[in-house]
Image 1 (cartoon, rainbow, N blue to C red):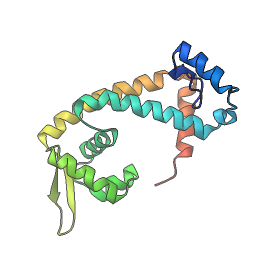
Image 2 (cartoon, rainbow, N blue to C red):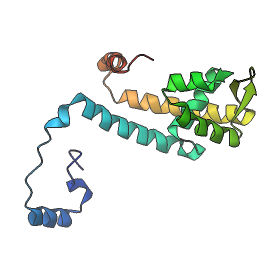
Image 3 (cartoon, helix red, strand yellow):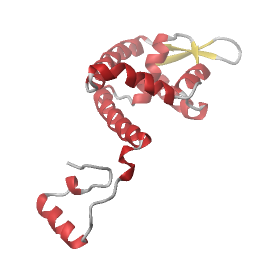
Length: 166
């Protein structure tokens, strides 16, 4: 198993690792950045999002698409601009995702006024969102369970300080 981002030993078989190491004559890497909080957050985030992606893959959704469905479920009639602000996504990035969910008949747009459309889940969208939500809630419980009980609340509070205000 790799000990760091730059440690390739875990990706090579024992024989290849020995041959690679001998032929390269490489000293162990200096990973002075391993204790940088940003680096640790990046690595943790990469693993968590990757695992969540795998957990919801059977639904044919990305993590962002699932999050959109959860937001619309909790905020029927919300404007796409409100969704984008909450998810911190530019309209140019959000529009194709909303269109994709609409094409799959998971959400629908209903006119609010001459310019705005409210987002709503369809019957199929509500059913799928319920199922996805169960998987995501179970997944999040597994993630937080990896953190010792006495560190969970301080961990979540510390994360809040790293997230800029909307």
